[in-house]
Amino acid sequence: MAEHVILVVGPMGAGKTTAISALSDIDTIRTEAVNTERDVVDKATTTVALDYGEIELSPNEKIRLYGVPGQKRFDFMWSILKQRAVGMIVLVKNDAEDPVGDLVAFFDEFREIHERGGVVVGITHSDLAPRPTTYEYQQIVAERYPSALAPVFTVDPRSRDQLVVMLSVLAANVDSRAMFLAR
Ligand SMILES: Nc1nc2c(ncn2[C@@H]2O[C@H](COP(=O)(O)OP(=O)(O)O)[C@@H](O)[C@H]2O)c(=O)[nH]1
Ligand SMILES: [Mg+2]
Image 1 (cartoon, rainbow, N blue to C red):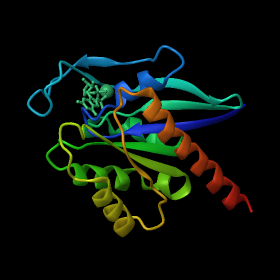
Image 2: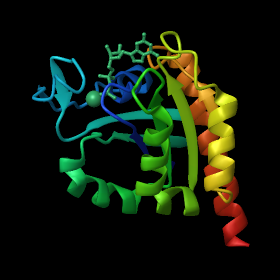
Image 3: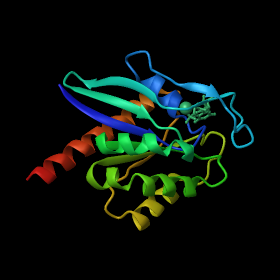
């Protein structure tokens, strides 16, 4: 069976832990701890190391999903997973202070993944903040990362169906690129 490592990245509160548990066929592994930054995002707990889940997208394709915490002080985790990942889901919290800045920060941080593999953007919390629109994000990505084929979705991380669509597009893009690079 083909196996792909996909990272789920994004700022605190974007919906990474929610998305991985909604998607995963197995009980997810979580490492929540008391949130010491309630002034930044008011959640009781936050992910200190990572989330892990697995999904069989098709009978011959297994995806290993790693949720990577948004706080900069856990940077060392990112570099290990970065090397193994073929693609990433960037979740952007639309009601954050600077969601476009968040997208740019994660695209910059994980540049090597979208340069060699695939990326999709999932805009969350758009029920609470309708703007920026997907069109605005598409423009930013096209301007700043012209070599990234990066579809932008509005997604609610509590909806498995929406996530599966987004993940399937990512997996197909990863496979297409791998085939192209192998020629
Ligand atoms: N209203 C709304 N709530 C959401 C959405 N996405 C995630 N949440 C909620 O936001 C909170 C933070 O999600 P979590 O998965 O812990 O974020 P993480 O820090 O990225 O792991 C949870 O209570 C989710 O249910 C969304 O699109 N709309
Ligand atoms: Mg989390």
